[in-house]
Image (cartoon, rainbow over all chains, first blue to last red; front, side, top):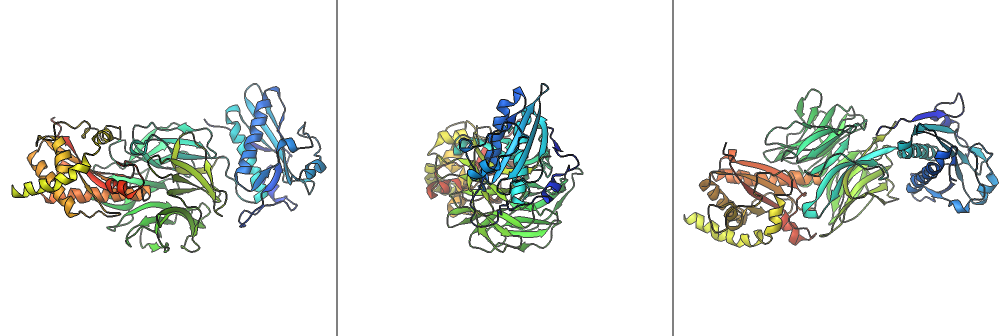
Length: 442
Length: 171
C-alpha cells in the first residue's frame, strides 16, 4: 500500500519547490476567490515514454493530470487532437508559437520511465506559453508502478500550486462509508479512496452499521462509530493494518461523533447517558476522559480549530440545533449561528478562517460556510438532503454527502468550491456517505 | 384489571399500523445490525398473552413521536402501560428499547434524538414498576427507517421507539 515518493529538483542546487515558486514570473496566475472565472486553457501532450515499459503508464499519468486540473473547474484542457507541436523528447525546445496558436496559456511537458525493478521516474516542466518561459523549475518524482496515480497527483499538485498560489490537495485520500442495499436494510462498510474516487480499499465488512469516519491529522488512523458491540461505540482503526480498538466502552453508554484534536492524541466526542448527550474528551494514550459540557440538551458533532484551542459544536440548548464555539477544555460557549433554520455538523477549515456546516431550512438541506464568529454566512448547495461537510487539505474545496429523495433514495459524495462553484459528484462504485478528507500525503 | 383492559383497547388500534408489515419488521432484527438475541423470529402467537408476538402485535411494541420531540403522547403512554403490565407478568423477558428518528436531520443529531426517545420510554416503564436492570436503550438515529418514502406518512412511522423483548439468559 505504501508508496515511496522522492521529490528531486531537476536543476541541481535548486532543490526546494518553494524556491521555485518564488522564482515564478510572468502574468500566468488564476485567482480562485473571484466570483466568475473563465477556466484557464492548458495543454498537456502525452508524457514522453522514456523506456519501453512506460508507454501505457505515460498516457495514463497524462490523463490523470488532465483530469485533476479540469476537475477543479479552474482549468480547461485543449484536446490533444488540436495540438500542432509534437513533443517527442522531454528536453526538446518548446515550440511556443505552436502552443500560442491553439491558445494554450499553460503547457505541461513530461517524461516517464519504468525500469525492470518497477521503479517509476516522472519528470515534468510547466511553461507559461505567452511569456515564452518556464514557470518554476522542472521536477522529478520517483515512485513505484502501483503508485503511478499518486505520482500523477503530485505533478498536478505542483501545477495547481504554481498557477493558483494555493496549497495543493490532489495527492490525498478520503475515508468514507460505502453503502449498498435499500434504505431500510442498508449495508455499510468503511472504505478509503483517493480524493478522486480511485483505488478504493475496504476497511471493514458490512456486518455492523458504521458511521462518520474521521481521519487523524497524519492520516494514519481513523476514528469511527460502529454498532459492532450492539451499541454505538467509538473505534480507532489503523489504516495500514485495518486493525481496530474500541474506545471507552462502558456498559449502557452510547458514544459517537468522534474527532481528533490537531495533536492526534486527544479526541472529542459525544457520549449519551440517561438519554442526555454531552461532549467529552479522551486522551487515547492514557485513557483519561473529561466532560466538556453539562447541559440537559443535545451536544454533538464537535470539531477543533486548527490550533487546537477551540471547539465548534452543535447544540439544541436554544430549542433548535445551532452552532456554538467554546474553549477546547470546556467552559462558556458562544452561539455563532443566527440565521433561520437548523444548523449541524460544523467543521473548522484547516486554514482556520471558515466553518463549514449543514443547514436545514424550509424543508431543504444546504452545505454552507461562515466565518468563525458566525458572520458572512454563505450557502453553497441546496438539495433534498446534503450533510456532513469535510474540507480538502487546502481549505478550498468541500466534500459532503448528498442523499436523494424517496424509496429509491441513495447516497453519493459531492464536492464544491468554497466559492459555491464547481459542484460535482465524486464517482464511487457503490453508494457513499460521510466523507472525511485526509491530509496531503508526503 | 380495569386499567389493563383499558390499555388493551387503546393499543388495539395501534396494532394495525404496528403489524402492517410484519415481514419487513422481522427482517429488521435479523439483519446483522448487532441486536442479536432480540426478537428476530418472534415466538408464539398474537393470541397467546404470554408470547413475545402478543407483546409485539397485540399490545404494541412501539410508540411514535412528533418531529424533533421525545415527549410521550397519551396514546404512547397507554401503549407503554400495556408494555409495563406485560413485563411485570412475564419476568423471564428483558427488553431493549430502540430509539429512531426520521431522515430529516443530520446523522449525529438523530442518534442523540433517538436516544432521548428511547430514554423517555425507559423512564416511563421504570415509573410503571419495571426494574431498570431489565431495560437497555440504544439509538439507531436515522440508520434503520421502517418506512422508506420521503413523506410525512413514512416519517411519522419512523420517529419511533420500539421495545424489543428478549428472553433472559438462563445461565
